[in-house]
Length: 544
Image (cartoon, rainbow, N blue to C red; front, side, top):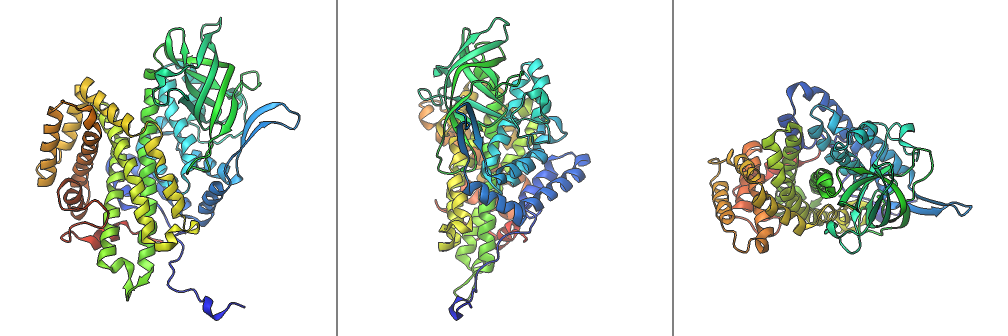
């Protein structure tokens, strides 16, 4: 019999049984804005169904279990034969199956596919971010494979399939396939041109044998991998199938799985190649050029993943404060807490709005939009991913001590939050990539300035920020040392211009005042008192 002292009061109910999509007004409005009208009805139905799935108690429990039971490496079978397989908890496979079925690898073959997928990826990240890695790699491999029409014809239907086929079999026997990627080596890190893995041509002219190592191989349980190696003609991209056409296993020696800070449900490994059979993708010596479109797509997924983590953290914080009472009233009604929650909501909406705008540029595919992506993707990847950690940490603090306890789910979000800033090129890599675009591709800067110029005259703080940015761009003296500052300003001005055009006035006003003007502090909860804080909090409140 429970003791009389164990009456539970003043605790919020769990945030389950709700539609994660329709509760996110910034996301739903972005989808409505960027999708063609004839696609909206179907997209609404799909995304709302996925939103209900994401908010269900069962699927959220799968996320908890997949994170609590990390993958295990089995290098040998019971007889001593090398198998190099990764075992996952059943919840991982359930999640991955639903992610594939939701079209998270099918954007390239669906109308409006990138906006629809971006919204779905942002939702699915909120369940468990780990399985986003193989979904992202598989999605991003398509443009690289299209440089070789023969390989694309063989693999693209499998990569864009909405069927999850987990068995390791030859590609011709599968209903769907997943891809991983291996570029990083011990001695080179982000400097992939320093890679030492070698590729020896075989007599047929298209096949090679690889020898070397990859210090970080994403999703090593996948059916195929895009890797970089030194061919006679220079650094080249290759496709390494996990299983050969005759049904035998390719030489793919998984030496160990990484023990990571977060992203625990996902396998990341170190692999060795020793006479590993591979097929060339693109021309010899153009490996970076071939794989760069894959990298750009995964960088956008880093932005989307961070936006998803931020949204879930903010939703949990607002939900908690809407039910928790302290000092004679609801926490959400206390002026100081309301300021914190509103500030967090602004950060989350700015990330979502920018991420969906970039996805829409992929769907458009025009020259102007491609030029915009050349600057906007690395700038967004730099800034949004770096804002993820302070956002999730502050949101956890809104729960007080409860937010520091694993049962709340907030520590999992906090541990995951730095990942997207590191993967696919850390901060300095993104900033230097922005500089390269500015220096070598004038069309990219023109496209960026035309985009932000659409909001000129709507807010004086944005106008001032654009003018200041132009002044900074005109001063190339010591620009590399200022690359981070410049990249941050590019991202903030782009976010501000989008919010001024598309967000409610109070959201745009709060962003421009605190992020572009001088009326804000360096921590959350320092918005000016003149903005409508209650309205911003209500806009971001999840409806459980």
